[in-house]
Amino acid sequence: MTERSNSLSEWLEARLPVISAFRREYVDFAMPRNLNYLWNFGAFATIALGLLILSGIFLALNYTPTVTEAFASIEMIDRQVSSGWLVRAIHMGGVSMLFASLYVHIGRGLYYGSYKAPRELLWLTGLGLLLLVMTTAFAGYILPWGQMSYWGATVVINALNSLPVIGKPLAAWLLGGEGLGNTALHRIYVLHFVTAFSIVGFVVLHVAALHVAGSNNPTGIEPAKPDDTVPFHPYYTTKDGLGLCLFLMVYAGLIFFAPDILTLADNYAQANPLVTPRDITPEWYFAPFYAILRAVPSKLGGLLLAAGSLGVLFAVPWLDASPVRSARYRPILRIALPILFLAFIALGAAGMHPPTGFWLWISRIAVTYWYLYFLILLPYLPRVEIPKPLPSSLQEPRG
Amino acid sequence: MTQDGAPTSSSTQCSSGKGGTRRRDVLATVTAGVGCAGACALAYPFLDSLNGTRNSRVGEDDTVDVDLSAIPPGQQTVVTWRGWPVFVQRRTAAMLASLQAPGAAQRLRDPESKILQQPKDATNWHRSVVPEIGVLIGICTHLGCVPSYDTPSPADQSGKYACPCHGSQFDIAGRAYKNAPAPYNLPVPPVTMVSETHLRIGLSKGDPDFDIANIQQI
Image (cartoon, rainbow over all chains, first blue to last red; front, side, top):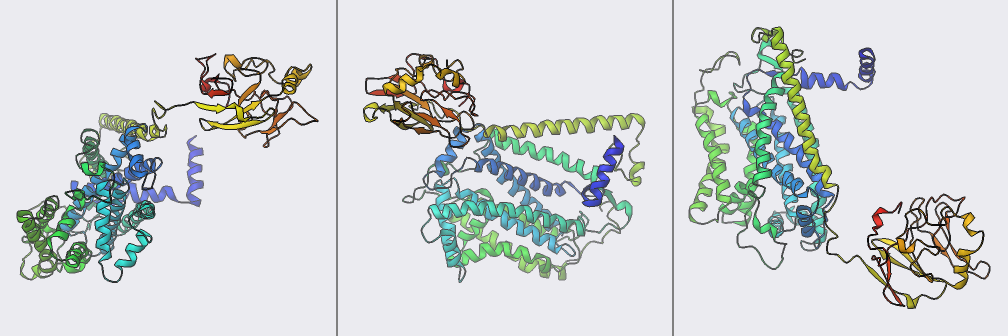
């Protein structure tokens, strides 16, 4: 019996060496031995993405992408389709879990300098993924054709329109020559699918790039000796597995105990092109960028600053002039970066409140700090900052 | 099993005695088992959602009324009931005679309508509530095509149904001929005569418990 299965795996191996490739990349793959739990969040994002695609396919089976029937078909999924409410809750909760994982994942990369050479492409493919996820989430939010879907889409498409040169044709291609109607809804539905599956392809690129350079680690020092690393299995399968259990518990809590906590009641009223809801609020994961958009008293200016807040992230590998990777050994950055995280959270809170008085100024201060950090601190801080002495190996205990 | 991937470098840290190894194997097996149970639980809502909508027919009127005055003798009209084509025919005396003609039964698979393909009040020689009016669900019991109606002609006054897909044939009461692939007679829906000129499909006065879902084959 074992002989036969051996010969089968040999037969397969000679023709398509998937078993040895899997063993090389996911079993024996050398990982730094000192990763902390922040390195779990990539796995979390992958699991959330898988569940989103699975639940998305099953939702699509019952969804109708027409202006007259979209809203009713979502209501039917929630009320009549067997377990439909659960499939939809998995999909809606999955978006929040994916964005939360991605934001922590990116924050971890910023803190430990995971974007620095030789991992620039890893960083860029990751940000490409973020943009694709944002596009998919935006397109997906329009599909239920509720009031927030409709007016969110209207605002974003009009913002797109105001971009110089490319704005008008882009918006026209999306809308198909008429207002926000059947044609646009159908295109947005297709866009939702196309970008969702493109994400899977991009994840492959992202992971391939990771497996060339190897994982960064909390010290930012490359593993040098053989015993600086441990094999992926069982060390990090176990560590990821434990984190995943906690992740899935939070996810399940969201699905079963608070499926509506992160959604807006206004989106359970069907789209009405004649009435705009009193408060247009984005989903929480778009709130920081929405706050930037509103913090600037200029249509194009707000748009450029909101887009630029993501744009500076793409430039980070070349903006950061310090040769030291991990913020552990950069005393000033170690304070400046957490303030950046606070600014992002403050922008998120501001995006969920009306842009007046206190919240307007919070968002203005936060967006100023955002640009100050990336455009001034990252390039010029190394001139004044004296880094702590780097340990000789990643195994050295923290000083 | 979990020892396979352990590097030599860390063998100093985990003192893996014989008992330790067995405890790990138990933990690994339990973890894998619980993981599989979780995957099955996760699969449930997705597969369940394929069962479609619940209670979608509750409160919906499931009956169709047919005006018989518009059907000339020897002709049929086709109405839709539950998405199926339903043939409603007005039979001539010659057609009725052909159903009872001597020797006709020998050519049929189920001349007495013993197999449950009709309500009790249509389990008779004419397979209908009243002999002059025939009502059949027009779906061939072979592979589901819609048989075409050959109207009575001077040459053949009895009329019949012939399925275009694989040559199944039925007499005017929907009884399947031998030497053709269709195994059962055409189904008869529940029918109530409302008046001389109107009938209602979907409700059987003579067999109120009849449920079309329970017949042999549709």
